[in-house]
Length: 327
Image (cartoon, rainbow, N blue to C red; front, side, top):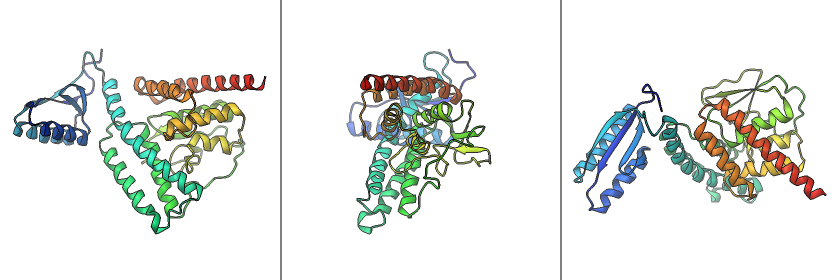
C-alpha cells in the first residue's frame, strides 16, 4: 500500500460515442502526443503539472465537442497501483520511442564508421539525417517525464553522429588505457541506470577497483571534478564510440580479451544498442531481468548492486561455457 502522502497525478476519465471512429483515433493520437498513458480502458494518467493540466483540458474539450464526456481529477494512488508502477508505465511508453531512434542512429554510425559512407558528402545528406533524429529525440524527451533509461543512449548516439558530421571525434582518449592510477577515483554516470551503466559498474568493481565509489548525476548540469571519471556520458572519459557501447569501449581500452568477457560485451551491446548484431540466446533473458530491476528499484544504488550480481552470474556462466568448449 502506498502512503497517502504519495505523488499526485492527473487522471482523465472519458467516454466517447461509438461513431465516428475518426474521433477515437484523433483522441488516442492526442493523448499519445502529450505523453499520457492508459491505466485501464478510457482512463489516462499524467504527472501533475500546469502543462499536463492544460494538455488534458484541451483534450477533454475535443472529447466533449465530439459528443463524448469526461472529467479530470487530481488523485493519489493508495491501493492497487503504486507510484513506482505508474512511473514504470511512462518509462515503458518512452522506451519504444527511444529504441526507434537508437536503431536508426546506430545504423548511421555503423555505415559511417565502416567508411562506406562519408557523412560530409552532400549526397549522403548527413546533416539532414542528424537533424531529423535530433528533432525526434526532442519530441520524445519533452514527454519523457521520468527519464527512461534508454534516453541517455539515444542522446549519446545523436551527439556522436553530430561530432562525426563536423569531423570531430566524440572521445579524446581512444587508445589503450592501463589500470594504474584508477584506484580511489569516483566514477560518475547518469542517473536512472540501465544495462550499459550497470555493466560498466560491474567491470570497474571486478577489474579496476574493488572499492570503487559511484556517483549518479544529472548529465546536463554536472561539472566534473579532478578526482572523478565519467562513463556513459557524452564527453566522458569512457563513453560510446561509433557503434560500440561504453562497456565494449572499456573492455577494449583495459585490454581485457578473454572469451567470457567478449561474449558478455556482445550481450550488453545488443541490449543497449538494439541492433541484434550478435543475437546470443542469453540476450533476451538478461534484458528481461534488468527491465524488471528498473521497474522495481527506482534507487540507483540498489539497481547497481543488484544489477552487478546479475551481470556477474552471466559472466560466470560464460566462463563455464568457455571451459566446456576447451575440454
